[in-house]
Every structure is written in structure tokens, then in C-alpha cells.
Image (cartoon, rainbow, N blue to C red):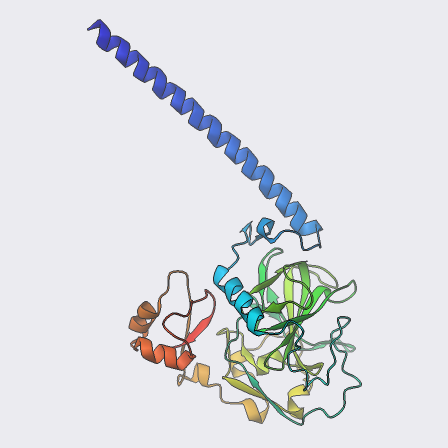
Length: 336
């Protein structure tokens, strides 16, 4: 009897000790986590250097770099000469890291150019807050704005090479320009941090920067432009921002692509019904003839095929992929 009482007392003491140890460890972990978050948030908001990508945070949590994207980018570097410049012949051999438009002296520009849009990724999922068009009597807004919070991740729209990383105090703030292998250039403005360097090759959907509120900006957002040979093209001609896909698989750049519009950039329009140049009208992606599936975490080709009533082989054929292709969250798969 006495022995049983002693054993019971020992168990009670052990249980109490374990509880105190757990509470202490939990408190210490919370304190360290809080300090780490505060330190990283401060660095993220006040630092402009590349730093160690493993310490970057985005969307309020540690930036989870998509390993499949990075692996693909690394594989692409092995087949893509680091000295090679995308569409060098079209751009007349001009490659400078200074400004957005450096092509004023370019001669023999093509009258038209067909752009492949197959591997498009939305640079950010936020809604459009400002459109392409005139601002007041003098200013012109050569892109669109997408809502984000400072620190949100910004992604490359297509495969390409980083041409510019600069700071413009009264304009773009921290911004980057990518020359894409399809011939377009895209501009990303008002950033808070770069995740890649000038002359890096990047894949569509690869994290390239963190959003911010730098330069001539009244709130956190991403300024996004599409250009060809330095000339701005209304992004609505190419991208359906409501459905977050391109209007079609290709876009024909002509002189009409560069026309300005009297539409105020402050007035938002339904981009899927936006009046485009004749060569790019009839958006089949929202008319029902073609449908897309946005890839989410946990999706597989089999599950997507069952959901949309198609075979896996048809999905692969429609998207020019194989059953071994890694599905990247946020990308779109054609399902019909």
C-alpha cells in the first residue's frame, strides 16, 4: 500500500514537471517566433538588397519558394546559353539595363509579330484597381494596377531574362523589366524587394519580387505593363484579368496594338469584354468554346480530368505536357 502511494506521488511530480517544461518551451518558441517575424518584416520593408532568399517572407508568412519552378529554371539555364538574349534579332541586338524603353533608335522593326502566350502566369492574383489610359490632361498610365499588400509575391508572366532592375523615385519606384522568349517585355513597378538579379533567366510563374508602395504610389499595388520593342500595349488586349488567363493562345502585334485610348485609367472595365483591335477580338476563353482550370494545392492530372469529364491524355495533348509534368499552383490548364 505504502509502495503504491510513493509510485503515485512520483507520477504526479513527473506530470507536473512535464507540463511546466512544455509551457516554458511554448512561451520561448512564441517569443523567438515573434522576434523573428518582427525582424524579417523590418528587413523586408526597409531593405532593398537581394540578401538570402531563404530568409524572405511574403504574404505575412515565410516565402515558400516553389521548388518545381526553381528546378525548371535551373534546367532551363542548362539548355539556355547565359549569354543568349531573348529575341535578340527582333530587338536589333540592343540589351541595356538602364530604362524601360531603350529602343528609340531601333530600325527595321517588323510590321507585325505573332506572340506565343501558352505559358502565361498572372503576375499577382489581386483585382485590377486602375486601368490603362489617360490620367488627367497630361499624364498617361501605360499599364494596369493590381491590388496587393506590401510583401506579397510577384511572379514572372512568361519565360524570359531580367533586363532591368532599377529605382525611380518619382515613377516606378523599385521596378524590373523582363525580356521574354516570346518577344514581349513586361514591367513590374512599385516593388519592395527583388528576388532575382539582372541577367537572370526566369521561368513563367517564378517568384521575382515582393510587392510594395515605392515611387509615385499612393498605396500598395503592382503596376504591370506589356510592351513590344519598347512600345506599350494595353494589357487588356492580351490578358483577361477577370478570368486571369490570356484571351487566346497567340497575340498578333500590329500598329493598332499601340493605339492610345481615351478611356480614363481610373474607370475599370470588364477586361473580358474589352474592345480590342480587330485582329484580337472574340475572346474564346470566356465564350464557352475553351475552358481553363486554375491549379490548386493538391491537384493532380487525374483529379482534374475527372472533375472536367476529360481524359488525362487529352489534358496532356491540350497543354503540350506529359503525365510527369509538375503542376504548378496558380497556373492554368486548358480542359476543353
